[in-house]
Amino acid sequence: MKRTALSTAILLATTPVLAETPDADSEAHTLDVVQVTAARVAQTVDETLSSVTVIDREEIERLQPQQFTDLLEGRAGIETSQNSAFGKTTSVYTRGTSSDHTLLLIDGVRMGSATLGGASWQFLPPEEIERVEVVRGPRTSIYGSDAIGGVVQVFTREGRKGPPRVNAFVGGGSFNTWETGVGVAGGTENTNYSFSVSHFETDGINVQDDVGDDDRNGYDNTSLATKVTHRLDNGIEVFGNILYSEGESEFDSTEGRDYTDYIHTAIRAGFRSPITARWETEVSVAHSRDENDRFTDGRFSSRYDTKRDSIDWLNEIELSDHLFLTAGLDAREDRISVDDRFLQLFGPGEFEETSRYNVGGFGLLQAEFGQHLVEGSLRRDANEQFGDNTTGQIAWGMRATDTIRLRASYGTAFKAPTFNDLYHPDTTFPDGFRFRGNPDLQPEESETAEVGARYSVDRTYFDVAIFETRVDNLIAGFDPPENVEEARIRGLEMEMGYQTSLWTSRASLTLLDAEDRETGNELQRRSPATGRFDLDRQFQHLSLGGSVIAKSRSYNDANNDERLSGYGLLNLRASYQIAPEWQIQATVNNVFDKDYETARGYNQPGRAAFVKLRYQQR
Image (cartoon, rainbow, N blue to C red; front, side, top):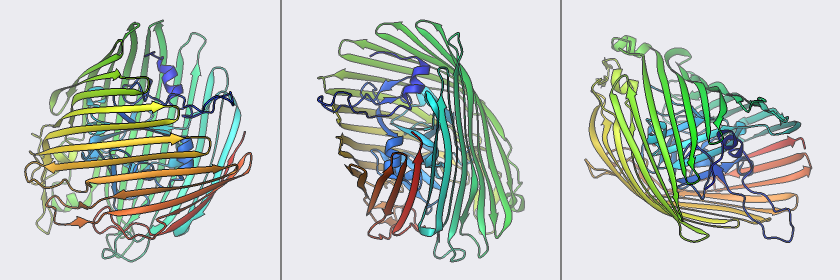
């Protein structure tokens, strides 16, 4: 397994996944799909000892998503739920773990709310995304808290060597939806750059039938993304990237106008430098914001803002031809700003603590022994609130044949309590509901074992894994929250893909047994079976395709009293290359106009059609 430098890792992470061979007489083949999230260094998907899914820009444009979760729903090990569509509260469950057990990174920047714990998946703009990497299984021993179920990393668009090339789009469709955007990207011998802006707005649908008014609840998102890298003559590379989104999302609460103003930001800058021929280092600083101002009946009601600053030092060292070390240190500070009129009316109004820091160090050692690969990682976190925590992971892989690779792993992980869990003011509402924090809470902890196999030849692959995760010290309750629950999650996941010059297909299936060990009930909103099938056919300038997404029944509540029915959706799409630089796209979602819910009482869109015109300068 050949190591690549950190600068090469970032470049490879945004290169196209598939390419035709230059020799027309040779068989079509797949360039190695490269990902950097699983081990924080560049590896092909075949090399990694993790279960990984990569979604590149070509696939994003082919699928024509209206929301980021359209890319994830039904993938191996992934399930989502939404409090309705278009900018509404969204949860992502990786391998049956809680939504706040999946870490979201944007170009290496840690995202999420320090009060609620989860990430704002609903505000991610698909048009600004170059690539998505999904790593299933624990990654706390590399990234620290939150990665019990896995990691989803979003990479924004990146420029490549060549003259400036403009791309633009305009589209619209059902629910009075409109979107537009423009960008430019290019590069020189030493500098790559990309800059783009986009805007999405929709009247949406009525979120809830029996709450608030009967009007549609709209959503808008204006986003800006930029990324620059520059290599100096001495080999040092400096880089910077920004993703900034702001907008408004309406919801149902009163007969008046209810909405949330939000800001979602990821900023990172730093440099990479070779120390020796076998040692490369990277230093970066990052800032993220997850800010939400809530207005009910048109009047301000609450503000819950999270700001996070961090600094990272990462080293990639080739100890020998068959022994590689990745090691790093990181430190971050979370700060919250809360202004909630309900807390002021019915409680003391202020959080006892509004900031905390975490310092962590980790090492990942990879060794090759003939056809065998062994990987071990260890991390130590020191947190201002709950003290020290150590996590680790060990994995083994073997090249059984030229086309089959086997893997097995065991790892531990943890999830730090949120500010709400620890410090929420003691508040009793008029209906008698009481919510207060518990500063004595300890992190949720997990153990995961996994075995898997991957078959890969030419443009065909098949990946299968079975796993079991046990989560202890689950935080439950509000008066106050306590470490009381346990969960055991067992699963089987399969993913396959096939591509020729005319056909592109990808399929996935997940079977899950997610149980609350205290009660014997199923974990809420986890379906025992989910699946997805994407198929596209190219006819010269015309492409036709469709996706089938299906999930079995689940329960909306922990007591398993509120049943959510299973459903299957068919989405169809088409695109036509009008000219070398112009393309028109169309999609019809929920073709059979199915009525379904992913969260009790929250409506989902019926049949909907969208059209988009794209321009890409050659």
